[in-house]
Length: 207
Image 1 (cartoon, helix red, strand yellow):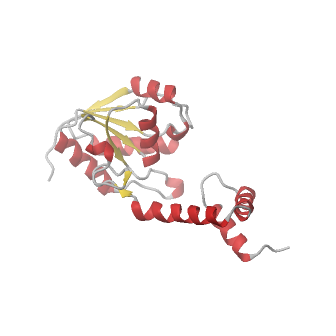
Image 2 (cartoon, rainbow, N blue to C red):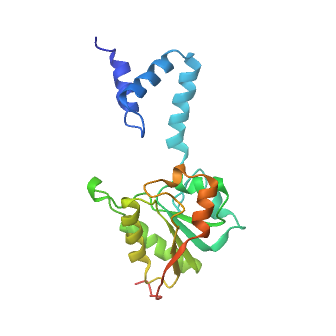
Image 3 (tube, rainbow, N blue to C red):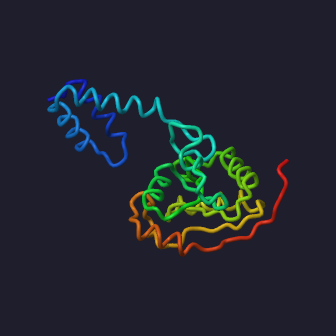
């Protein structure tokens, strides 16, 4: 039998979420149908305000309600060390683990030829300008230990070689093929502490 159109539409929408298949999506839909109407209203409002109230921080790209975000605005952060991450979720995982006290910069993407993904050149230019403007002494490239993470790492490395700062990368305390988002505090701390120097770059002037 065919399902009512509202069920099919919501099921299809939920299937677009990461890690949600058709069966899981349908199960969620029927769970929602069994909840009080107030629950559906609260859920709908939460999703709506998520997009309305949050925006990328103009300095680092983290999602925030304020400009700049709380991390960039914190005067106690080490403003000479910059950690470059792929997503705002990776930033949040590092923050919740309390293993890093410097500043961040979110790439907002990765290099994945199979998916047709490339890094925005404007993001890389923003990182270079931030390094020179703040006098950053070390940049930690914290991409995920997988093929796409490696390609992203090399793209960032190539873009920053002329910035005159120390470049390092998370050590392989993170499992190959894993994700920062699923790593525990001990693993993240070990990866940060065992990071490897990859290059000393030559300073250059911004044209």
